[in-house]
Image (cartoon, rainbow, N blue to C red):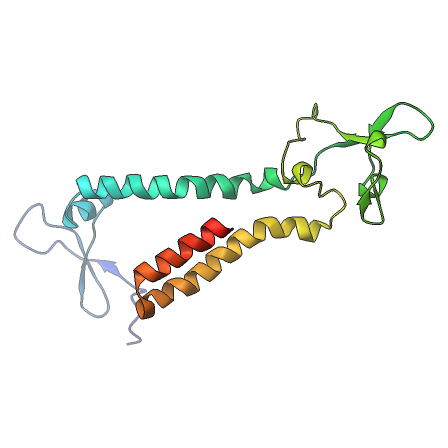
Length: 179
């Protein structure tokens, strides 16, 4: 036989108890018990005070992370820009960033503005750091660096076995504070 469990066939319940678990007979003649989630939790010791405290701690720790990840689309959103129509005092939607940028620098603010009345214009990284003339690649790096941190963290966590968890944790905290 090839050792695969691809042709598992339900067999009769084994045992004399009426409430015994259903078993599956595999090709390797091993009996596999089937449990639902409640039964598995009960077999693991139940959901007690420690599990509740850990759930609360993990939720609090990752609450900020989830906010950051889901808000990236808003932080990098280019707001609606309104440009002055040449020779008039009226404004219309800018066609692209070349209407407000010249040689990589912003032109006079009297000739354009951010339309905050538009539903898709927010005070975000684009407006605070005036990234209107920067490349979209550079703007995308703001969000990507965060995920690069996750990758580096995975490498550092492996070093905890070698140098100790406390040293790696303190190093990570200083890096987080520095960023």
